[in-house]
Length: 232
Image (cartoon, rainbow, N blue to C red; front, side, top):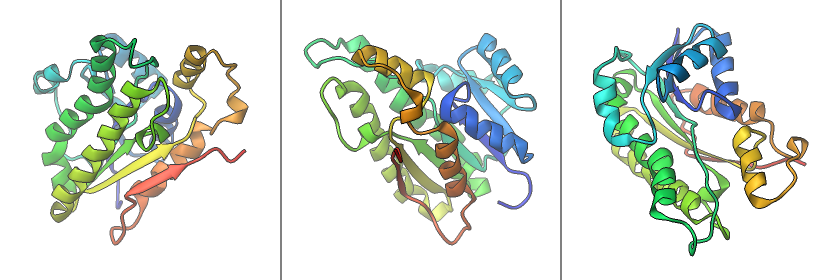
């Protein structure tokens, strides 16, 4: 990307999202961070000095269009990085519609809606939409049905979007990290009743490196799907 680029990022508060945001700010890019409410926006602005914030709640995709209409939106978007995600494990026999909606809204419907709302700016910039998916987006295991369904859906969203926007010069990438050290992964380990040892997991910085590689790739190439596995 030539000159200063503008990136819209979800999930910048911790883990992979925080690492990517920090790296892009360090190189002088313009950053717009999605926050669920004004209080969270203040926290993100303190965590990442120099970043702008945009308020919109991923758990309520129906309200995103209204929320964005009340705020100043970036005129061009060079990359839209969907990094936020939620997880709630449980057996199909136990998961309620509330648990399904919680994960499907935040992990799938909200990314689709944010993409829809920012597509005009992405087309102007011939930008990049990158989805941080999961190993669960490729295979579903016991007690992971709702989360894996949301991530399988996210792969479908990315694949369709890639075909639809190719002629507009918009690139689309899905990144499938294995287990990455983060507060979310600590929560998963608690739900599984396992000890959380971040040294055995992927460092968020390593996933951030792969994300930057994908968005910095010269225009003659596009990374479609990228799987990142623990190296130890």
